[in-house]
Image 1 (cartoon, rainbow over the protein chains, first blue to last red):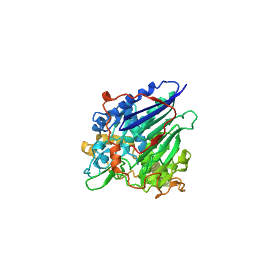
Image 2 (cartoon, each protein chain N blue to C red):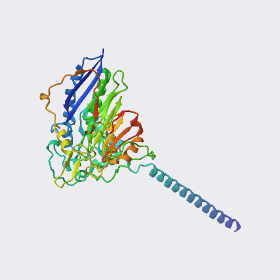
Image 3 (cartoon, helix red, strand yellow):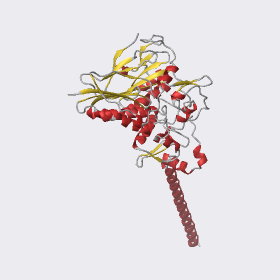
Length: 308
Length: 144
């Protein structure tokens, strides 16, 4: 007889929640996930001085043999840059640090910003599959950020899928495999940054729903300017956009994550039209004035619209 | 006399014909070589990633250290469907279910993002999964 298991814990700077409906396991497999995610974080975090990513960045300019986990993440980040024509660029880290986000976010007070830093072209991330080596330009640094979360969530979901239907929530990034018995999918909601009730709820099945926004991780510099963590690779500064949050539905978590950044940089109207031209993608946007917009495809997933 | 004149004329004509033939042959050969060189120029790639990469690897450290400017690779997001078919679920100015349209509360965000660092593995208390009766609705929200 199948049972629905639920596990929550803290990792990667956020709450992780995993649900698994299975009759093939007594929930033991879920108990192994925190250790697995800890290993991923130890490899991919830019906030841990001993992480493989930090050590890799310190060797910018050299060919470096990396672990399979780091290789897959850097490869995914490069792919994300490719499919967004550079709107998403994993090499924005020096620019992000110049805006003041050069330390643990909790330690950011009122910071002095440095002159904006040019971001290296994503095409200069070089990979050698046969030897597992990667090279980035000198002085460049990779920030995996949302890619690492999306990759981890998708990895967990793929690992659990043989045991049954599952839903992974990694700090608001959602990946589903299958659906609970008797339901068309996993019911999920999109948070409203301007209120308590969600903007919409939808069925999620064999897909990812990734959300990014400028409502999250904002800080002020000593000159009074407000910064946020989404950097425009072409200006080296926090993106100027009318999008507050963008949620993208796609079969692939990395693609969905990359598309959220592309929509934010393109702006609400242009970004949503662009999403419509992308295969299997659907999106919802809340702009800075509070308007909610979505592509027609997105509405096919929506179960309920919560409006005033 | 007549035979001598004829012989001379024949000799001169033969020499002229021979020289014209040789000149034509040389000219044709030159043209063929020119065509071949132009063809090889056409077939030779003007630049390739491999060549560029190799060239970069032998440049001086000083030139390698410069991070390329970001002015190129501007995000030309091609909009293939120009027809505006965006669905507006809520106009700006309409209140959400709770709360009003205002700037995001930066203080709240800073508090919610406090614990970026996870505890070292030795301090992790492994949680146990619990059985629930029905799926718990999860919420998608901004993260990075």
